[in-house]
Amino acid sequence: MINENFVIIGVIIQSVGGVGYFLDTIKGKIQPNKVSWLLWAIAPLVAFAAEVSQGVGIHSLTTFIVGFIPLIIFFASFVNKKATWQLSKFDIICGTLSIAGLAMWAITRVGNIAILFAILADGLAAVPTIVKSFKEPSSESSLIYGLGVINAGIALLATSNWNFEHYAFPLYLFIVGTVLYFLIQFKLGKFISNIFR
Image (cartoon, rainbow, N blue to C red; front, side, top):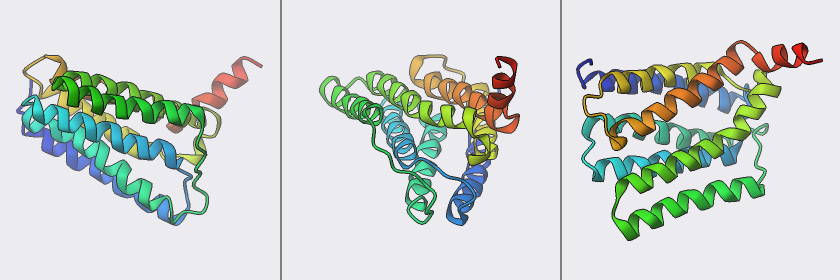
């Protein structure tokens, strides 16, 4: 275990990736899906609020930054003419899960329920970007995901209390970030498609 203050370094590292993605979005170099990025903002911010209510402390900054950065990228996507806004049934399901997490938290006052629903909603919101990264890796930037993996890894290494509210969201972020990073950076989708031709 490392000192929990290293979480701040992880947040700074994640922020560097976020600024890069934000600038690439404004310049039109990448094409973020507005729905995915909006849901990627809502779910972690719900989880962040739940973590704070559960007394997670400084570790909750990891979850906050992965909600705040997508929020600013969502707003930046309106400047980018190549960004897409396609509301599908799938997007409605993701949004419903986020709202259900909030509602269950409000009813039960159990923050872990909100964290679980936030992970489910965020994971479902990641699927369109995972598919896009598989098919069109050049439409994404691997930097934000790679730095996100470092951020989540630092949060996990700094965790001394291994209960759900402390490790669940960072572990989820580590897994999904790793998948996205490798799909984009190494264009694994094209490689895998060539194997199965």
